[in-house]
Length: 385
Image (tube, rainbow, N blue to C red; front, side, top):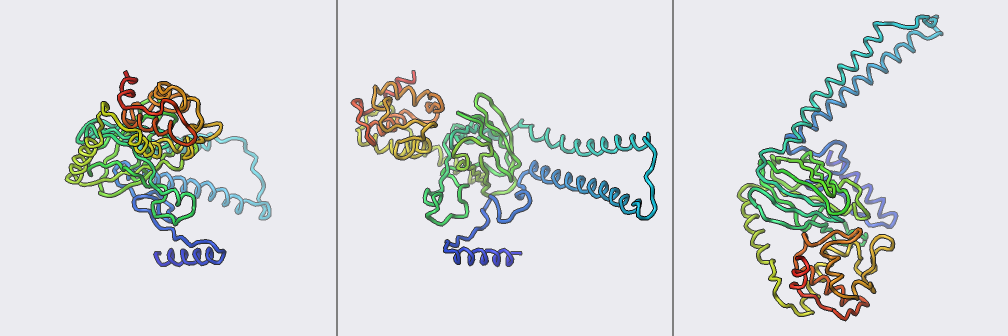
């Protein structure tokens, strides 16, 4: 099988070379989709195993019905054709047949519904979770907040980390193309993890096929699901709800580690968060804020407002030459904190320093020459109250 796959890849590569195109081999993604994979991803939770078994059971039942119905139909056509002397029957009804074709499908439906209902009930039982994680969908990244259990208080954003030159097609795509992130979720093996989902803007959907989890994230609503991974490894998924122009660039990565490694990750993450926590009363220079703001803009704003600040006409406004950006800074601070129109509020996502820095960056970049060209974190803090 592996030899056949390699031969097929070589043939495809030779065809591309003959056409003058680069031959970039496509291989399986660890924890993600596999080349020419026809079935579900290998399950690593009990729920995923039950879903896989149900899928196979339904296929067997449908195949049996197909064979039975078409077998009888073709047998009747062949054995009772006019050319061998058969004449059409003249009966109009049969109570026995009508009872049979009512009872038999009913029993089949019951036989399919019972195991499916059992699995559905188990999927919704989020009680007694070891760790609870809030998942917030936003255009186009995920926010994670560890609410309960070991790791409580950890919070971070997770965004696509595939380099732009791969997306543009100017560089060779790696094995995890479009399904890799800068900050993966980390959970311990054999622990029940409750996922609480919501969204800041439009409907998203948090999905990991190997876990058997697919839960919509809806603005203004809180939904939940759970999983208990039984195998250490990295597992990948995507947002599977059409959520906007960068819907395809919103992957999910979960690292399942041992309890010991999870404790190390928690300690390291908390130290990292403490180191990144800025004193909002610190006074920054304009150059420091611009340098910090450029990074914040690239991580959070560039997808909508673009690297050149021109935005997307009809969808996202331009910041280059914007009256808001060049006007009084209080107005821009208010919009960034609380959102406006299609722009989500950032007050629960970015720190005072991050908001101050990105506003300062936009007011001093491109063709913008705002008179109030610097915003300090203390001003953002005051605006929150």
